[in-house]
Length: 247
Image (cartoon, rainbow, N blue to C red; front, side, top):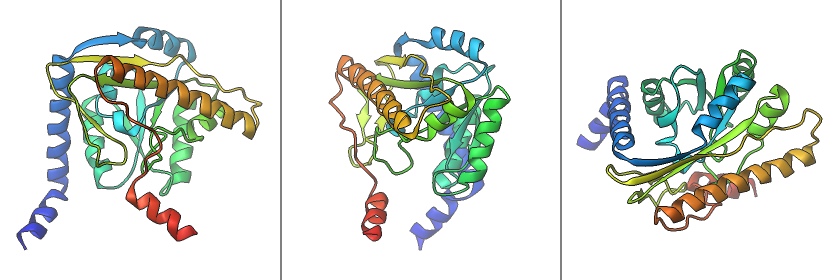
């Protein structure tokens, strides 16, 4: 009975707000106390000035400190799943000055796709986590490339690594939980443009190129920070269940 009551309390809007704001202040504290080595942030804003908007991507397991270096004066809206965890993420993003678009590959996908394109056309950057919400981890979906092709805007990948971080190996995404007062590296890939006349075969080739670039950068940072190698391709139990049910 007590466990059910606690679950009910933590599902309330007030609890979601508290958890989101608490997580934000912790991540902000980690960001402020980390001795950062940063690569590509200034160059990214130059590209943003030239292109008006961009498509930001990053891996599910590296989302926590992704917003830290984003300039609040530059409009950015992130695609966030409408489930409960998504509501907490929205609170974190709001504190970082980032908006959100509700939707996922399984729910509200059409409405979300329209809103994402509308944002790009209006000069607002968008953020997509292309290996969520269930994996396979660190594998790029085609979604960002479609938006890049249709809008003419570049894709940039963001990743980071912080020494001493705890890796949640029991989660499908091997989430990196950073701790304060450590060294850290934050890096951004070179801009990736997709030609308007790209075929489906071209898109798949570009998808793999972008995936490799972001993975190689992530592994390089982890090695520098003394973290173990994290392989790609792991999936959530729910994902495995869905695949088995289809067979």
